[in-house]
Length: 168
Image 1 (cartoon, rainbow, N blue to C red):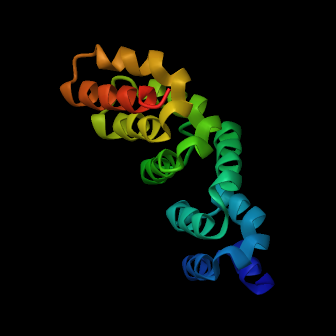
Image 2: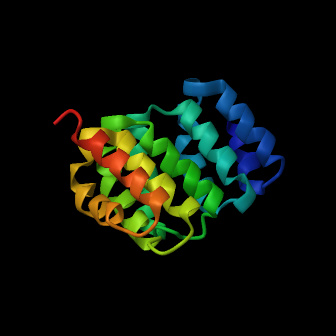
C-alpha cells in the first residue's frame, strides 16, 4: 500500500490506484488520511473516484465527519465540481442518523443554491429527507422551499419534511 500512496503524490496512474484501494476495502484504512488529502488537492477529475474509494474503506460514522471538515475548510461550493458535490450530498443522505452533524452543511448548501437550477438544489433536499428525524433543524429552510414557486422543489421539500417528521 505505501507504493500506491506514493503514486497518488506523483499523480501517476491515480485512477487505477484509487480503484485498487477501494477494492481492498476496510483493510486499506491506513490510506484514509492520504485519500482525504488527495481529494482536496489532487486532480479534479479523480475526486469522484477518490470518494468511491473512501466509501469502500471507511465506515460512514467516521467518514462523514472527515468529509464535512474538508467541505467546511474549503467552502461549501469550493472548487469541487458539481458531480463530486452531488455525490457527497447523495452519500450523506443515505447515512440516516449517522449524518446528523452534516445537516447544517446541507442546509447551508441548499440555501446557497436558492434560485439556481433544480438539479443543483434537489440533492440537498433529498439528502435532508434521507437523514430523517435527525434533520429537524432543516425544517425552516425546507418549509421556505415548500412555499416557493417551483412545483418540483415544493414536492421534494414536502416529501423531505414528511420524512423528517415521520418518527419524531
